[in-house]
Amino acid sequence: MAKRSNGDVLYVVGYGRLPEGTTAKHVYNVLGLGLELDRESGTILEVSCTTVPPHGNEVLRKIIVGKKLEKDYGAITRQIRRHYIDRTRGALLAALEDVLTRLKEAKSDP
Image 1 (cartoon, rainbow, N blue to C red):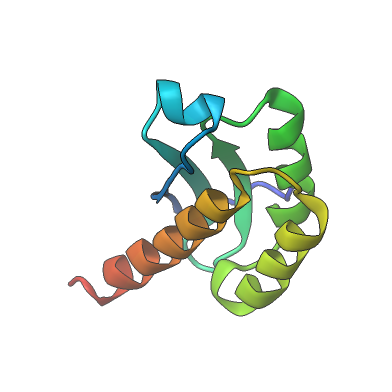
Image 2: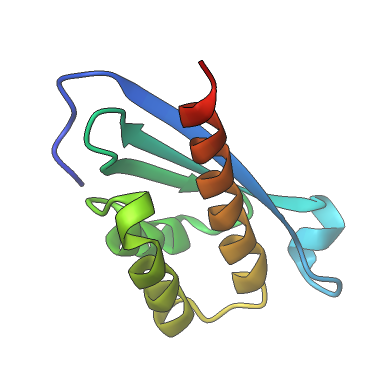
């Protein structure tokens, strides 16, 4: 787990459409990915993902926590592609991209 922030934190959620033919698609339509970020440094403090089993969330935590979403986005996506082998991986990557979009929108919002 990343060092806790002493300052402001943001919780940003992004969504990705689940692929047809997966069990998760029958229960949910989308995968949700939530990241807790230190507002000042941009460091990812925590991660949570719907439709992913608990151990899968731990794997994601090891890949994502402690990195900076904007600065390390490419490295994070490469690590997910390399280490997270599942039919929902595309939805997970889409949700991560959506989180990045939401974060950029929030930064530009006065």
